[in-house]
Length: 455
Ligand code: PHE
Image (cartoon, rainbow, N blue to C red):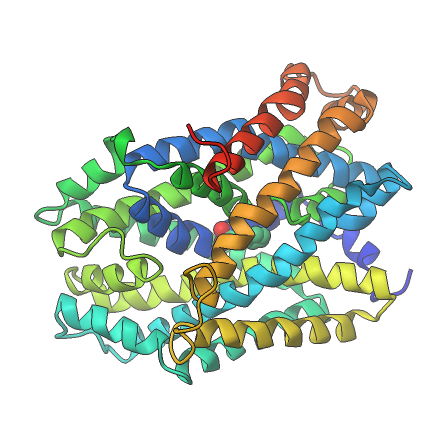
């Protein structure tokens, strides 16, 4: 195989820690720190959180494990893996939906990634100093509706991501993120401490942890399901691809569990940092996509060393974003390489250009193009909604049916037990979940969420 081929990379996860770090690097990102609090906020708080956690445990982690199994058995990318395991059948549609989702997700995800860079520079320039809560909010709206600045930062993040994917230097990034991601976690914990001790912050903890199920609508339940896939990087073939890199001695179940736990812990810690502050500063929890960007600068202003912490936080958030954007672009690039037999650099650059063009329109839809609505949403919100709730959900549904009904039980057993070397007690439970629970739950939640079934 030539140097451009991913098989080279397929052998490159030397340590299990490196592998888990890469999977966690993909999972932990803006999904946890930006999208999770914003979803909790628009869906009324704790009830959403409980449903979300439920989905992570009974659907998300089992499907992640399923994606690992497919990947390590087939040793191919998202689409190729299905074609290898079930030649001449149409299961690979799951992979195609995933690649399409990856394409659309990166278009708006890179916009938000750009926001983190703007905020990093604002933090360095100490721009928030002396601003009121209202001014910080207005500053955010003015920034995202600007025709130039968000697009500029988006180009920066796309350039860095493309450079890394084109040159295949992910391993270097992994090395850094192994050190830097724990640091991000420490900063979020410090933010938590500051947030929960703010006067009036208690109401935020109540919002986050005391469920009121009357606030949760069918749409919110679908949001919770879609977000569980989004946050765990499922339904895009990313975990299939990572599974294909895993060594035979790796314990797949333990890995899926670790990634799931790490991802959930980061989201919860982000929620604990945000909601007490939201209530203490009188910000509206259903603010939407701006929630984190409007809330956190206020928290930094209220803490000793806030200047330094704000810089560190946005720098690390940017890196967490980068480990996710890399995995998303990688998913599309890998497909393009194989499908069109294209060289890696060319494939990465061309894919990135198309994504960036769509991304620019998405960014402008927060400003000059905000009057152009699709089903009542601007393009930015529409891409966000469509990908998580439709694409990822459908792709995950197909993969769960594939593993539950089509894949040979012996393969599942072989992959889970590492060919009999591990004692695994949950094989039947996992099969049962992927065969019945996950598909039925996904179908019901999906049909209810889009209003076809009324409960
Ligand atoms: N899981 C990433 C996050 O939470 C985003 C992502 C979604 C990455 C889908 C890959 C696939 O930020």
